[in-house]
Length: 224
Image 1 (cartoon, one colour):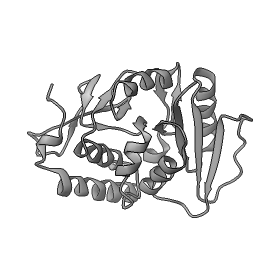
Image 2 (image 1 turned 60 degrees about the vertical axis):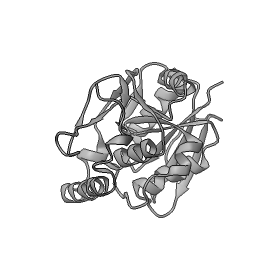
Image 3 (image 1 turned 90 degrees about the vertical axis):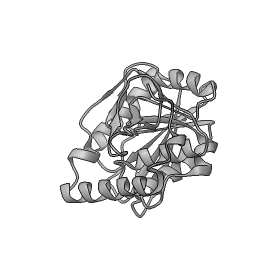
């Protein structure tokens, strides 16, 4: 039996969300927790006892939505997954194996903070221990991550996943990036939002990262 729940924040674009949900059900035994984020048209979900649905009447920012899923999921591990991501194989089993080794976060994409660039960029070094994971698909030790929590000030996802990753690292967590049988379609959270909103909140998130973490090189993973 899977110890992992895949949590998806749904902000419209239901066709992509359904495709993502169906791929999880087809290729894995993971549970699924859906947060219908704000007022939307009804979502035509597959019938399954593996799916739990929560509704936020008032739309939550990314940080509060992630915290809601961490608090209301029941299994040992929670993967935060964007609805643009789909399974092409059993990604759940692969990340569970790595989490069982003691890593507190395992994901599909991530990297190392570029120290020489004064923490202004991230280098993708491929599979291995990393400083940050991205929320296309990031699986977490749920209770550990819940204790740390995503920043409620993070209204937008971009760089907020990095902020959560670094907070986990600061608390002693080790994070690991692995190749997974996943693919990504159009990322509506990036391409289909107002550009000024996207850039403002991305910058706000990154400025918080720099203010809180820059220079704390001791919390980073080994360089490679």
